Length: 175
Image (cartoon, rainbow, N blue to C red; front, side, top):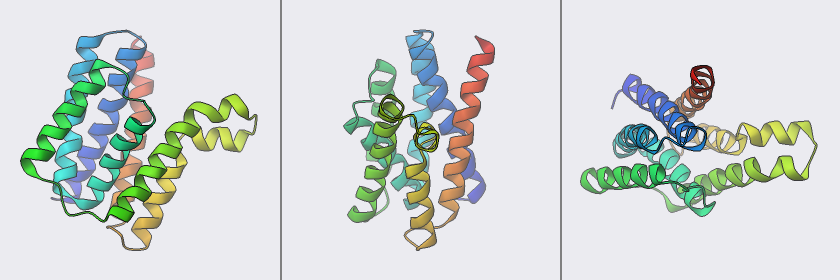
């Protein structure tokens, strides 16, 4: 798959993921949150089945969130079902279990840290580090540098994160 298409899939996924969550968590709009969740599941799954590096990222986010009990709404369940169906139909690339587990632990650390650090520490650096989920960014960067997958995956992941933050701003401005 081309670099441009993967970049677009990451951008869309980040935007749809955050917008879906805000619609559900803030507006309690299950229908619209589910629509955006379906879109997120579609674009995330297409990136996953098309590229091993993308598969590590999106599967780690999915599994890390499941382990952290962050799949907490019907919109998440619908997104998960769409993602799994596409991955089962199309198949995922061959992955290293060690690299996948490393990415899952990074995603899990980000989720747990995001929810707990500000409650137990006033350290500005730690709070910002986990507010913006830097564990996964660092791990994806290091895995790219050391050749586990193409370094472009790190750039795509940054696009995902930027789109995630833009979705929060757009949502806030529309409400």
